[in-house]
Amino acid sequence: MAHAPQFLKLVNESKKKVKETNVADVKHGIDAGEKFLLVDVREDNEWANGHIPGAIHLGKGVIERDIEQAVPDPKAKIILYCGGGFRSALAAENLQKMGYSNVESMDGGWKGWVSAGLPTAKG
Image 1 (spheres, rainbow, N blue to C red):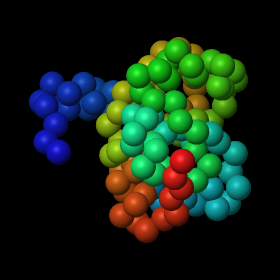
Image 2: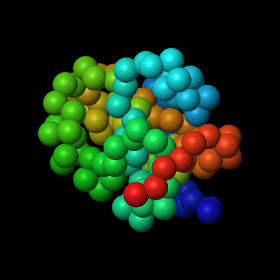
Image 3: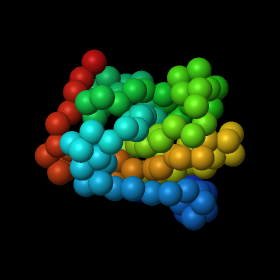
Image 4: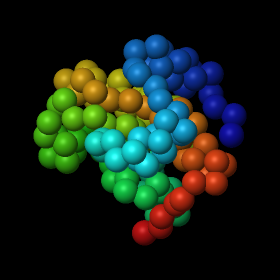
């Protein structure tokens, strides 16, 4: 999918302000038992078609509204992912603005996870 230039500009500005991680590091953290909350910010239909095991779903359209109930501790480590790492960067920046201090965006997102042949879940 070719993204619109203004969307890419917005994403690139967000990526300058947020910490990014990658698929390999997230998988390593999961395998090592590292404590973090993995949040899928994709749309409902994307989540239903498959997601990373152990993730919770807070779509980008509602994450700012629902994050405080789902994750009351603003110091909790949160790793966000989307399809490729763009929407998650935008969401991470907003969570930082809300006072969440340990938020990361997973570059490569769902596509990177699947292309690496890593486990997926449905439902």
